[in-house]
Figure (cartoon, rainbow, N blue to C red):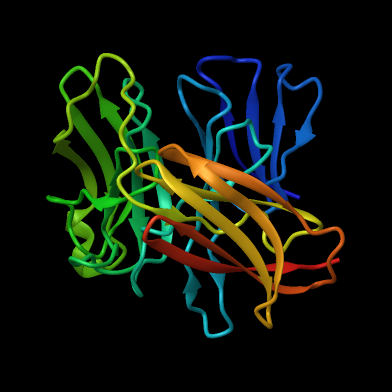
Length: 289
């Protein structure tokens, strides 16, 4: 087992998170003892919220198919120190997007994130080859932030100059014809750097992929609603028969999560469906015992 990344919390230096081939481990006593979190995916890197050590982001290592193409990196987030994780990479779409190469959190406004991406050209609908993805709501939604970055490149590292309101990014151009574009790029900061943390509103209804998946026997399902709504969240078997009602109540705007315990159910593919106001969505989950 190899160590891929290590991060020490800036707000509590007793807490350290390490990304391994088998997932993420953490210590709360400066490394004297270690515990494995519920994140069991091969990890490329981790990043800890500068003001809250229980909020951690983890990028899974991209997978290679038999024809040497990529299955893109997925980005996960925990808000409870690694007990549960949600997939927040749904907004990073497009056939050319390959993997996340770097991440930076604004230390003065920790809801603001920047991801360095690589893999394919960016257009109006997809993240791509020399892109920076930008989020102002802790990773729930992503928009491009790549003006001035050349194509056919990889954003390998970033940092934020909070004094001069700048984002600095190092770029590598992989092709000989583009090598002159490699270097450090300084981008104007379009979002005001706050003197204190801001809570940005959730702007979309969203049903997240359960984590872990596959699971045995407990998994966590998360969802967000931008307004108060009557929420119904149910689980069905592959034939459409309802097997469990997880939520059936009025809920306030925000991010919510619920555990699904399938200890009484047989292994197999299941579907979970949400209804919140006029919003509906469904996703698949796999129980392996």
